[in-house]
Amino acid sequence: MSGGDGDPPDDWDEEVAEWDEEVAEWETDGERDREPEPADDDPDIEPDAADRVPKVVSAGHINWDVTIHVGELPEPDGETRIDLLEQSGGGSAANVAVGLVGLGGQSVVYGSVGGDESGALALRELASAGVDPGQVLVDADEPTSVKYAIVDGSGELLMLANDGANESFTAAELDRDTLAAADHLHLTGQQPGTAAALATAAGEAETTRSFDPGRRIGDRSFEAALHATDLLFVNAREADALADATDIDPWEPADRVVAIKLGAEGATVRTPHGDVSHPGFEVDAVDTVGAGDAFAAGFLGAALRDPEISDGGFSHDPRDYQVPLLVGNACGAIAAETVTARADLTWDRVRSMMGESPESDLLIEIRV
Image 1: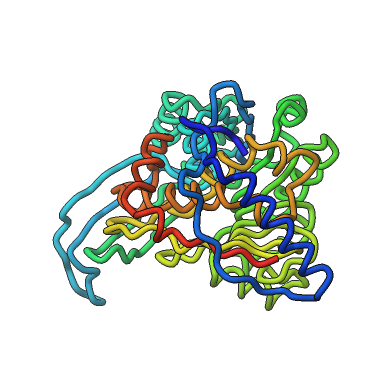
Image 2: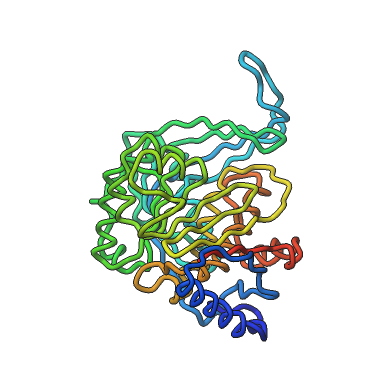
């Protein structure tokens, strides 16, 4: 795995040897479950500057967000006082693209905005964050999608949104040279046909693919795009909906890697050869909007730097995902402490978040 500020712990080779021995015993004896493994005393989190810098095309929604914080959500026909109102760029594709840049990656965002002030603000904010917005389609006939998130004092939220121009783009407008030059394509919510065509084109370019279809997964026919991707991001509700509606079982995947976000309970990574889980970090959540996008950015930001994980398709060995899982959960926790959906992700903040929980309490459970 990628190196950090220091060398791996002295017992790293011994731990790997013990894992290999246990796997061999399972293959011989048919044993499946294992006791939880503690996290490394000093896991290598931040990659060295000499490591490769992943270039990711993030395709999907680009919004302008209005986040409204209230003490409690009003009852029907009721009224409540606004404690805080913030405006910022949003949209899952844009959020992941910005997060990856913060973690040292290169991002190209692909989607569409309207030819209005909100669209101009969204593009300007992406460019200022270091994301390449040059592939974004501007639809002059539609308004930019504006999403209103109303968050109460406990972090619960109510979402209001217009579709606007955020699905005006199609696969045809994306420059194929841009896709071919990328290490990875990350798809978020969009038209099913567009997602399938982009995933297919990336496969032809031998680019790895991930997909976070979002809360509308049960309402849209994403089967083609799902079958064309290597890595799937869903939450527990979405995983159940997907298992009910398709032949893909995220909890027991047959041919792909699935990262299942469990909110305050952390996350689990499921592979055909086993799984790895982490309980997450305890934080005082103020706004969970964008926490899933931050998780995906952290997970990809760590995984794509490690050739053992991502070269030639994503590894199916669950042990390879300890660091991506830790980083993803740390980034999700950072986002939950952030007022808007666009969290400022850096390796320093990831390390700081991990330092808030003693390493002895960070139990990573591995099943092979």
